[in-house]
Length: 323
Image (tube, rainbow, N blue to C red; front, side, top):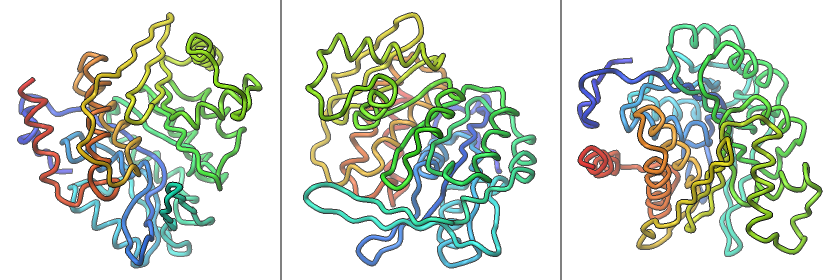
């Protein structure tokens, strides 16, 4: 990957270490339009836009959708070192349906990213010096990719960031349980937190809301149960709460609201990307959380999970460079 020396981000003196991102890159179909997506791919593209070296490990087919995904690699100047090509399976597809009740994403089975090859992935990883490793749960629905991911995590000595990103068609408590044990930092939204409460504390989502002190106690219990460095709960427009080791709690609430909301899809991916950016750039934790919340809100004010105009990122880099 060409070293662009962070000329836009103000980091000329030293190249950042690599953030490894493993999981699905797919094409979302909505209203007759095809758009590249997938939570890991969204995160990787945001990082690339902020000039963070990243290694996106995924697998696509030799088809038109695969060409669309590769076009995004080129648009964001991302290395293809971790990009695998499948001659049999199709590039991942998902059908996005929007309604007054929200967004429903149907992810099709048996796609190329379900067959990420272990040897190819390990070879790509061996050429990098990772500072963080991002992974999710959707791509683990297949045994082959799950085995590959576990081999990568075993070979990578860096903080492991898990984004549960649970989908209705791919919720497997066994995979979640294993992933939580493999992770150092875990990000969940409120619905995903309710699933964890149900599985591990027998608290049904339909039960009366817990008092705030009991919610905090349960979140701290999850941190202890899975030996996490941190559990981050995103709360949409209400901010986020960080539950760290040694009972550390950081609630970030004072975030500027977006002027309007067009699409909430991708907000969690935007949050994750900026959290990782803060890890790379060694921002104070409170600063990282505030910036992650603000950027996620800004993504809600544009159509899609990733900006179509890369100029979108310029003001954020200028603002954070000047701060």
